[in-house]
Image 1 (tube, helix red, strand yellow):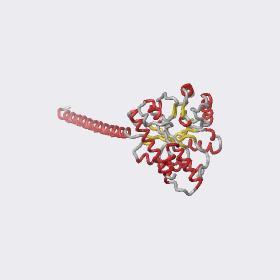
Image 2 (cartoon, rainbow, N blue to C red):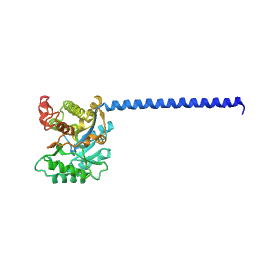
Image 3 (cartoon, rainbow, N blue to C red):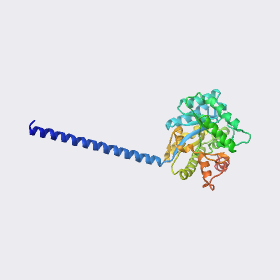
Image 4 (cartoon, helix red, strand yellow):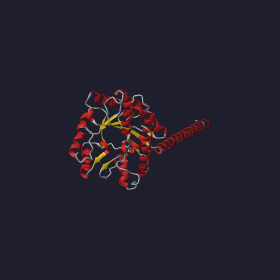
Length: 330
């Protein structure tokens, strides 16, 4: 090979090397930029409070002039609209009927989850309710739910009452572990059930009654509770946890859930699937307050001893909302 031909080949090789280096550098810069954007997006998301939606009990009847299929269907459509998956903590006493099976099957078939809330919804802090009776309540409810494909082994205490003696508290915690259950704790507690009861009373008395005031009160009440419990949680944990908001499967949710979710989004909250929220390690926290219960946030705050001036017992209830709703004519 003559010298000129060798130089030509060598120069072509060097050009190829340089182009390859430039292409590789451009790719690395692009990947770095994409990673930076993703990290910035992740940081923005981490700075946002998070909320998920869970529903207790499960009503199975027409309510205040609204057919079951109507108000229940509105809940499902709202969740579908916002591309959210929820969990219903089912009290199974009324779920063996045609209506009960309809509620469970439509919920399950829409991709939402079913979890255990006892069969008859007893108060575990009641002296008359023994540990053995409460254990049987869980097992009986599991019999109602176990054949549904989206049944998951989360358990939520009725009234959020986890036992009024150390023996009951520790005995049932051991029972949950033995049977493969995790605690389906609430981190944002509220009194939506009381708003629902007053709304149904109003509509029963006057089917044409204006309900805009109830919608406003419902949304403001739940959002204020979320802010309150998130502010405590932020101090305790140093971060925004994935909150589990306690709602009930009722008429007020059917009428206003879409507006509630929209409100949280408008206020900058991330709305997340309920089953994914329970992947947050905060739900592994075990507190030692007796009587045990209320929301996990309340219980952690009580145990810390740092929030006694703002904590009340019970944490939420109709006694805190009655005068305010009376004053508003609701």
